[in-house]
Length: 392
Ligand SMILES: *Cc1c(COP(=O)(O)O)cnc(C)c1O
Image (cartoon, rainbow, N blue to C red):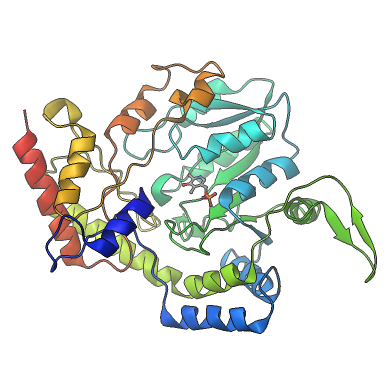
């Protein structure tokens, strides 16, 4: 969907030559970063090297000194975090039915069973009452998602994990720069995983990281991302187990260093844009706005729900009509348990009604740091007009 939007963005399809297509997201890469990448390309060292070390050190500082290890995607970060926590066959991991599918896929990939629970309609975050009810003697971990960058209730999460002796692998793919009670997500807690995909608040093109973990777990993270290999003296190698390969390149790390320097500014801008949506739709929004959170929200996405039962057009038609007006709209996400792979595990429609409703009604409206406040005005005007004309 995003690459499609970007394509349309460059062609300006569906709009006059004067109004460029507004995608729902777009990364901001500054000139300094581009020049830095050129230098890395000229340096002769492209794969994992000094820039990866620098990025891991800078992220570690950002997360209050905790260890950080990067991978080529958050999907790899989450999978490796599960593996170093010792989660595998016969284990159950509790996770929300509403997230990007990677959250559940990694649980299946390590041989464990994803045990879905429903989420809150407005925060999209996991419902802890239902987490409590889903715990069995086989439960080994909880994998919550800080949806859209709104932190889950961390007090409740860690109290629950401690009481039941569960590991926590936080899917913080959305949540870089999000803050809970004055502390950054990633600066405390068990194993916390971030994504650096271009749609996320900080990008390395593709990439991710794990923060936290004991020294033994951190060293196993290094083994998992590079063939299980440990180097001894200059001519000595050993492979401790048959691992895959997921090490970040120095080119990607250099992009991340430039992004990290701008992250607080990017996130402050995202908060301003979100505040603009809320102020323009104060009281009479034609769609259901997401939970507002507080200043600890990093506004990774702005995703209201369409009033499908009160409108004569489908969501696909809404997206199409917005595109005709030069505005990109995303969908984040479909309910995971309804995918073929999860129906095959026995999940059925009706089990997680809130996740299913979000999956049907959610639309992601444009929000990214390079947007102007007037772009928000344009989105609000277009969406309001389309929904007014489509009202039953
Ligand atoms: C993007 C995303 C991931 C996966 O991140 P990649 O870096 O693309 O592998 C996992 N979980 C959630 C909630 C995401 O949004």
